Structures are given as structure tokens and as C-alpha cells.
Length: 274
Ligand SMILES: C[S@@+](CC[C@H](N)C(=O)[O-])C[C@H]1O[C@@H](n2cnc3c(N)ncnc32)[C@H](O)[C@@H]1O
Image (tube, rainbow, N blue to C red; front, side, top):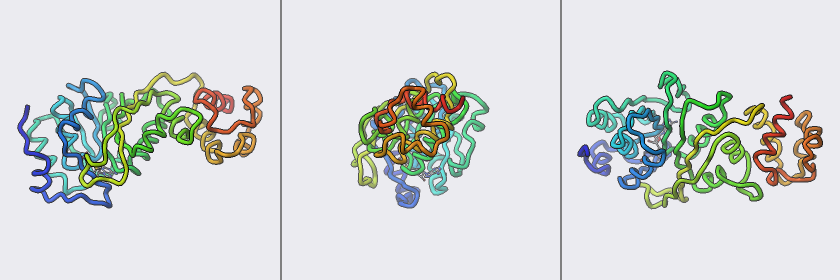
């Protein structure tokens, strides 16, 4: 195994105090980082996109697993530490300085498949997640997402119908993918510790239901969950054709959004597309 200085030393040597504005909460526990890097399975020789490597804790775990990593980081203070890692693993690490929200990820890998792993600030994580999950091209070029979220957001992603956690994120994550809670991560594992617990979600693409449209599904779930306490006949009033579609599909318009399973939402969106 390549010998590297402990992460705390890397932080000290490069003066990387965690920036609140950039949502920086670093992970130093190398065993935990190795477990996170193992979630997508064997990464040896595979392309990996890591967003927000920071001082490179998860990055070194990915490199040790044999991955070919491209990492996007917007805090230029972290670049020297990442350059040291690139030197320690020749030919395995490319670092792009920039905002991951503004970069075309598929273009980085020239159309080749890649796994995505990231421990991101929560607002950026959710924005990227909806972008990765919401594309019209399916299956996407990415083969899996392994992402750290606030535990409450992770639970919304894997939620089943019937509870308050179930909503747009669950439908988006589950209608053509398998989404699982891979592990919980205690707040004390981070430096500095955030206020809430975290969890890793693992998503793999599945078959897209025939006639499905991401845009229509988004329109229906936004309306239905936008007024989640109302009956569907009220919340879907503004969606042209939705009330007729409920009747055709034999869905009781007195039901509320959170009682519809993912398949029923997909059927509703399909009925509106035709
Ligand atoms: C929660 S820290 C995690 C750092 C490291 N991966 C770890 O696990 O210790 C998030 C990192 O994402 C970076 N970041 C924040 N917003 C970003 C963006 N829009 N694009 C790229 N990197 C971003 C921050 O600078 C920070 O290094």
C-alpha cells in the first residue's frame, strides 16, 4: 500500500482550515473512507468521478482501490494536497478546478462509463443528485452514485409510500433506479462535526419503464407533492389532463400524493404524455 502522511498532517501542512461557506466537513478515518470506497464494488481500473475531494481523504481510498479518478474541486487551497496524491499514484488522478454544477460530467470521460462517489455539501449534493437522476438519456453514462447526504435526505431518497419522508425525491430516485441506504455515518466522524447525522446512499440505474418521461413525471410529482395534504383532485387541478388520467387509470381522486406508489406516478405521467 502506498505510504501517505495521515490526513490531519496534510491539512496542517497545507493550512486547510475547514471553510463553512464551502460546506467543508472533512473525513479523516481511513478505515471508514475505505468502506465508502468499497460500496460500488471493485473499482480496479474503473473510471470514477469524485466531486469535492477537499484534502483527498476519499480520493486516496479510491486510488488505493485502483480507480482512475477525476476529481472536481472548487477550493483551490486543496489543489497542492491533491497534486501530492496525483504524484503518489502516477497516471491515476486528474484534478479539475471548478464548480461541479457548471461542468459537463459525461464529456470528461469521452462517453465512457464511470462511477460517481462524493461527500458533498448538502445543498450541492441535492442539486447534483436531481441532475444525475433527471436526464432524458437512460441508462445514463454513470454506472452508480455513492453519495453522502444528511440522514434525513437519505431517508427521503429511499422512502416508501405512506409516510412523510415519501415525496418527489423518492419517486425520482426509484422510478428507473434502485436506491439503497448503504451506511449511516455518525456526525462525530467529520471535522468539524455537522449538526446532524449523515448516511451514504447508493443508486444504480435500472430499466426505464416504457413510455416514461422524466419531465412529465417531474411535473406530476411537483404538483401532487406541492400540496401533499390535499386530495389529488385538488393538487392536480392545474396539470392539464391529469384529472381525466386519474379516472382512466382508476385512481381515486380523493387519495393524497403520499399514498401513490412509484408505479402509479409513472402510469400517470405516461397517460399525460400520450
Ligand atoms: C464535505 S467536504 C468533503 C471533503 C472530502 N471529500 C472529505 O470527505 O473529507 C465537501 C468538498 O466539496 C467542495 N465543494 C463544495 N461545493 C463544490 C462544487 N460546487 N463543486 C466542486 N466542489 C465543491 C468543498 O470545497 C469541499 O472540499
